[in-house]
Picture 1 (tube, rainbow, N blue to C red):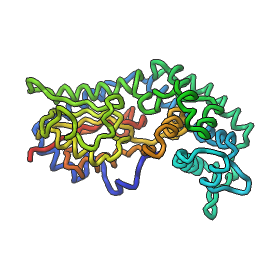
Picture 2 (tube, one colour):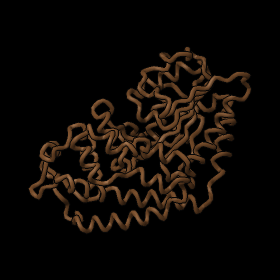
Picture 3 (cartoon, rainbow, N blue to C red):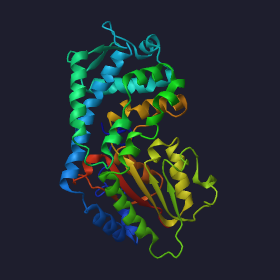
Length: 360
């Protein structure tokens, strides 16, 4: 799945889109940004490590729908007469904070042909696998998955913390108050941050980010840089102008890693970053640009819905084009983004963007 497509119809590649060419040409440091990004992006991991990551993503994406289908059976959600999601959820005793997740699961299953919708009701598709075959296929897939973990420094631990046993997941979906006791070992392992720690993907994106940040600080005796990530607890603030020590137009750079796509009120956040940056200050963004089926069946996903539910529903990953459009909408000028489409690690679904606040 490729993120949110509705918000970016007609947005072209950044190298040819007329929205970007006047802005990039006007920046005195455009060539510096391009050089810094390209040089870092060309320092690739070993080919066998890239192949390991590609195999993991392919295998896990094919396994995720089977795991969803298996869990729905375990929850007694499926009916040969068909079902409405809300009604089936109530019959199965599943808490209403999981409604959005259940809808997303059905979208994933429909894409795989496992379920189909007729007259507002859901039915098992003609190619829906039987429960015994699902169990065998999942067991086989997990064996294959464990063979392609070389890309992650703590591969086995990473894999173990992504998933919980089905009985724990079912219990939490029926009784969300059990989440802290049943799923606490998985609390720190949402898919995207976990992939972005101690892995070749983290190292690769990190070297691009570091190169851009070093370029941003050149020529400044005391550069002011603000970092925003999942650990800084700034995601729920409406504006950077409210942050202590962050007056308007004072920052040389803002680095936001794996956090903006989860922010309630992305527009307010981007507007706040705009006001916090100096003219010619830069925003460096590291974000997933593809939504993953695996993300929706991890223990961390169930835990998040159980503990935050209605207050903070899941947000879909934005595509590369949607991010470009969002930056332009808020007045930023694109200086570059990596990895470029069609290059060795573009399949990984993560992108580093650097955009600049122009001189007014």
